[in-house]
Length: 119
Image (cartoon, rainbow, N blue to C red):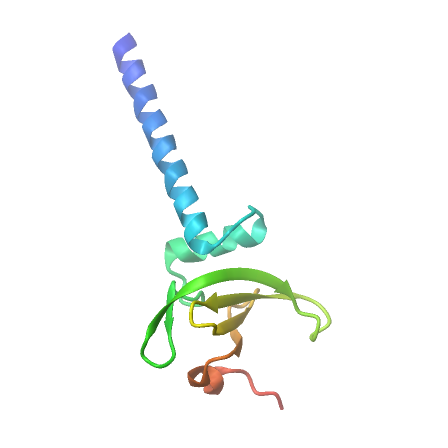
């Protein structure tokens, strides 16, 4: 009986260690430096493959580029709220509404027809 309990405790310890390593990897992959409510949403979107969140790679001219940084910024132009900005290795960026995930800004020419109308 004592051996069985030790086995169960060992399995739990392995699960916790593997889960911790996986969590650190996901946070590094998402470019998260501090853990807060926004980082939970980014992690959750990456884990479930949310279509409103940007994938880890992007393409404008057919070349695949990597995500360099993801950060949440204040939306001073709108007066309140915030948006998520994804910066890519080619210097381009995309901006998403933090609440809806809708694309609201982009430096890529191929995204211009997907942006909301300014009228």
